[in-house]
Image (cartoon, rainbow, N blue to C red; front, side, top):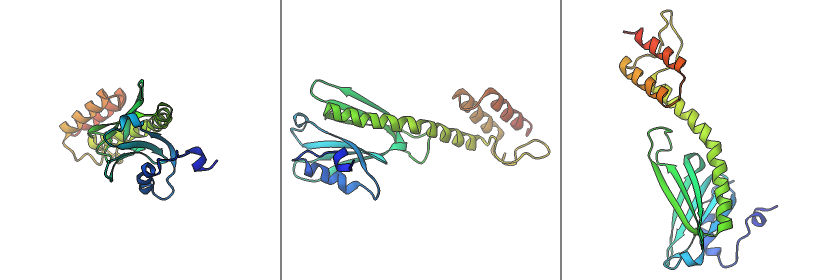
Length: 202
């Protein structure tokens, strides 16, 4: 089945899809789209949201031209929800604003309202699948970042049993290790191992 058959485009919405097509990169394909119902577009042209092979894209168009895009990579999306109303559905997603770090990043909400119900559900299902796929990857990345900050389990052990990379202040290492334990990112035994290594440096 071709991409055109999988994602049929309704006549009269060519201008709505033009900004979306202009944002696609080489090899990126549209998996599903949801168009805003005309009832919700009285003061602007109809918006649309698209799930592609690499990201979620939203396009809002003004009455006199131009468009405002929302571009969210799948790995940055933290959650996705859909609410079906009487006249249309609303897709809500939250995404990290600091994509280069898995921890300490703020989360920003995005909302796409007035979407056709069946189309919104299709886009939502893709969002859910991507969210679940990236959740475990993000958890592992958070764990690695916290371990790097605490200095735990990095480098080889010397003859005295201390980590060769233990250059950070021992008190700070203990605080970070305790934070990791409280967050459930390391086990009690891992925490005790870090604690023993840090205390041995005093």
